[in-house]
Length: 115
Length: 190
Image (cartoon, rainbow over all chains, first blue to last red; front, side):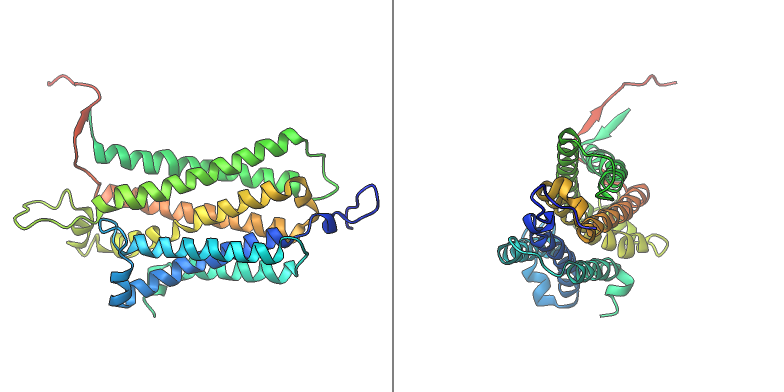
C-alpha cells in the first residue's frame, strides 16, 4: 500500500528516494574504501608511505582520510544525479549492504592477510 | 589515587565518547524501528521527529569524536617507538604487546581490526542522521530505505562493540600510560 497526499499524489513521488539511496550507497562505498585502502597500505610499501599524512598516526591517517574523501565525493556525485528522482532502491540498498558486509570482513586481519 | 594525562584521554575516548555511543545505539534502533516501521503505525509528532533528528546527529558527533581522539591523540602514544636505551616497554604499549607471543595477537588482530573497523561507525551513523533529517516521517513510505538505515545502524553497533571490546582488552594488557600525573585523592600510607 502506498501512502498518498490529500490531492491523491503518491508521497513517494513528492519525496523521491534518490537522495536517501545516494547516502546509503555512498556509505557502503565509503566503508569498503576503508578496508581497501587498509589492505593496499598494508601490502604495498610505496602506498604505505604515501598513506602517512600525519607521522605520529602513521598510515592509518592516510587510509582513513582517503576513504572519507572517497565516501564524500561519491555521496556528492550520487546526490547530484539522484536527489530529484526515484531509483531502483532495492538494488541500490542490496549493493550498499553487500559493500558494508564486505568491509566488515575485509577489515578483519586474518581475512585481510589472505591478499 | 592518581591518573596520568594519557590515561585520562584514554578514558575520555573509550568510556566517554565510545561507551556513550554504544548506549545511544540501542535507543536509536528502538526509535527507528518502533516509530517508522509502518505507514499505518501510530502518528509521529513533530516533537518526536525533532528529538530523533537531534539524537542521531549527537550520535554522529560522538562517533566522529571517538575515532578522531582515538586515531590522532591515543594511537600515536600506543604505537610510539622506544628510543635506544629505553629500559622498560611500559610506555610503549604496541611494543610491549608484541614482545610476548601470549599478547602479540592483541595487537596483530585486536588493534589491527579495531583501528579500521571503528571508522565504519561514523560513516554509517552520519548517513543514518542525514537520511532521517531528509525524510523524517516520510521514511515510513520508503521501507527499503528505512531497512537499509536500520542495518547500517546495527552494523555500527557491532563495529563499535568490536572497537570497544578490543580497546578495553588492549588497555588491560598494555595500558596507555605516561604524561603528567594528576592526583585525585591523596591516600594515607598504612
